[in-house]
Image (tube, rainbow, N blue to C red; front, side, top):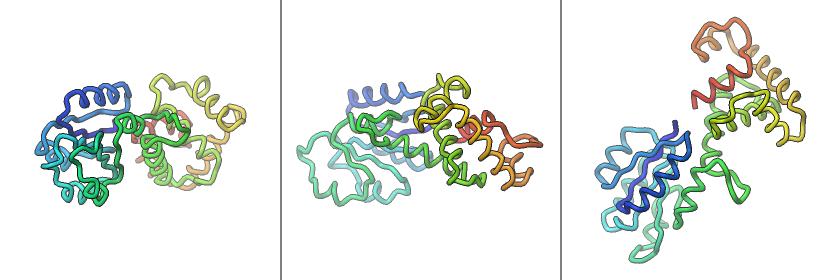
Length: 227
């Protein structure tokens, strides 16, 4: 479960963004309505994204504190420019700056209206790739790309779980190949992975004794559960 931390004093904003996040089964929101609560939470939990709505707190927000945090993704949301010193905002080391709540929502969606990858898709792909690298897959193998897409599809839609009926055909359509080709390319890259690892490491990764190459189903759903 990916966790998002949100700070705002605007109750209507919190309700709107929380409702949107709750509609995504892979996201969970932690809401803070005071800076002290935000600081307490931000220092003890790993969040994929921290959203700070500064409209009502511009006078008390400690920019330096938040800019120096070891967090990869902080969204600074300022919906209006009234009484806000834009120079202060621009000079602060925030990764993302947004003025529109709809833009923030798009960061947290697997679907992008402009054809570009959303933040959540990019973030999830990085996590998948980390797992693949840990298992010493040959990342240039087309089967690895198919594998990444299979994991991403399942992660983005809980209703998709059958590889043969649901997942492979969607991936195949994306690359204009047959579902059978997707399947056997994934098998091929898994066999190569097994040769690149010791049986002990494979068993440790999957959490049980396994005396042969893992099936695509076992591999894909293991990665889904790990990221």
